[in-house]
Image 1 (cartoon, rainbow, N blue to C red):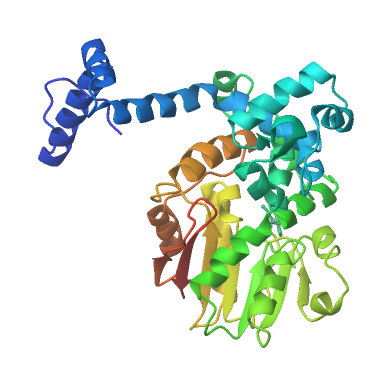
Image 2: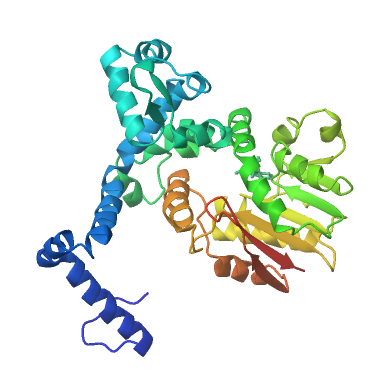
Length: 372
Ligand SMILES: C[S@@+](CC[C@H](N)C(=O)[O-])C[C@H]1O[C@@H](n2cnc3c(N)ncnc32)[C@H](O)[C@@H]1O
């Protein structure tokens, strides 16, 4: 992107957009407009919504810490069915009474718990949704590492990914001899939401054989099996991860392929390959090498499914660009990509074409299907 030089002519569409943004920002930033909006019955709801959004940005870190305290203090489990008093909750969370009172009031303001007068506390709407979502709870606990890395965000960005971070140490699986158990468990817990989106899209309706590359403990493959019992399934992952796949009937029914996708060739004989939450973990050179290896393993009428939160997708911008943008920066590898950026890598890797497949929840995942 070239630096903007005043007076330099821009293409008409860009110039019109520049003028519109400049005018809008002057109006929104003017104190007179803000006072007018606050007084006008017509503009007041918009002004309130905008200031609430701005305040959420200002206070987001505090909200996340309240969330973490609620999860770690065991409040979701204790308030699962029956109400509990502040004193009971204080005992569970190992907090003093005033501290628990303060936490509960903060959690109530965020919809995590709800006061039941003298009878104590119950889960709020957000708390009830979160209690049913083991994956989200696992991510909240895991965020302790991300927030440690983000304590000085500018320092993290200026460092240009040179120094190890808490997240990069956590994800240094396999290659550096770190136990694969903890990260595989985290991935497995948050997989259900992703698998639901993929299966609802119907992309596998005509698939006969699928290899899930980077398939972890085969949670995704297991969900595919439930929806398509006749489908032949395989999982490729690092040897220590493949070794963790269960030995129950479902685990035995799939082919296990231990290996390193940057060093070993992928097994042939599968009409479809899936990459679920894999590509964005890797910088462009490694992502391209992986796509080339996949292209080489697929038959002439083969397909690749890429499933991950993507950048620039309407409804998923906060997850793709803001959350994963910073998460992967702190991890020191990978980046969220727009569908067209993934498409360009697919073309470079030798795929003949690709298409985006819409999902109901782009914050959970977007989908791309490529053809050989
Ligand atoms: C972010 S996890 C995603 C797991 C799973 N697809 C999911 O969505 O839950 C990345 C997976 O890629 C595997 N992986 C990382 N590097 C690998 C490599 N070089 N070769 C094979 N698998 C690898 C990891 O072991 C892990 O299971």
